[in-house]
Length: 248
Image (cartoon, rainbow, N blue to C red):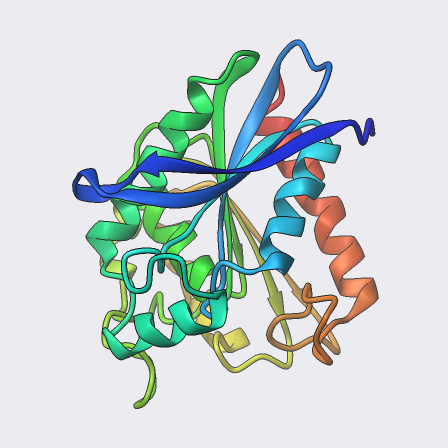
């Protein structure tokens, strides 16, 4: 691991031609690198998600985090923009696909890019990573970190856009890694088990891992839900997975 990197806030052209804020990090001194679109969680485009982008850069990948809530409150804090987005019923699926596709195009055009692009998402971003992998044929690998509402409806009080998308599974166009907690209920082990069975039936390449003693958001180092052993093993599996599908 070479931790020399550069990071900055940029503007990309997202879905429908909208100019949205994004955060990017990339390794310095790398001749060729794979890239990752990082989809932030429902709490928003925050410093913790930007830290994940820098972690990818430290491990030799370029990364970009599109601000999915930018249209709801341009220039607002991540908390305020997330609140505005929830009030607007969340991120529409077609908008998400357009924003991720634009972020992937940005990464693919970087000097040194090997053209291979992955996507990863956490919480609602896990669902959205699955959505992107079923909607953007040019993606090479996808990671779903405890993404719910792929199979089941969201409970009352959550954004109306969180509808099941299991009907898209037949269009999954790249290998999928799923990382889940055994104590989580969104998604529950029953839900992720059903998803795995459906993907098996469709012949879709995937590998799922469920961690005992871990619940939702076990990767989040700044929250009580953090589980160090599960998170460390999860990162090891991410590096192995992306090493297989995104490396030069």
